[in-house]
Image 1 (cartoon, rainbow, N blue to C red):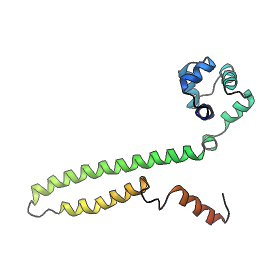
Image 2: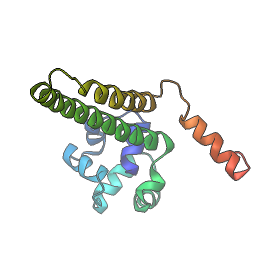
Image 3: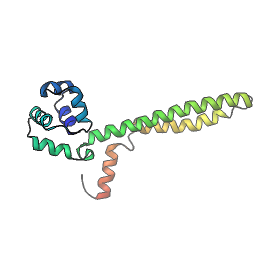
Image 4: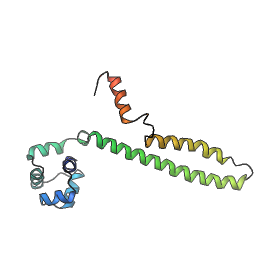
Length: 155
């Protein structure tokens, strides 16, 4: 993870890091996914990042959650929230379509499925507003303020 972070801080692609180190792009990918590099690979990476091997090795032994900075955490959380929203939306469309057909077959004179669409649709809209932070009621800044208030100090 530290190799990826250092690479991204410099604006390098995996291919560029591979060129600078003489390692293969596949090796860079493996190291960024958590595979422990050999001594020679570690030395080449340290040279590319202009740091000593001990510092790089120490950074690589740290746990991923300590290395991950706030931006990465927020991006990861956003992607998970987005995935949850799209999953919710797909379920809505499928269930409503099935129930709409069922309603047409069983009681076409009384379309009760519209009430379900409306109620669940409100939930979908609320979920979208939350994920896409349209109003920002519970944004990361709001969370930070609440944490500061709870701890009684500035972070």
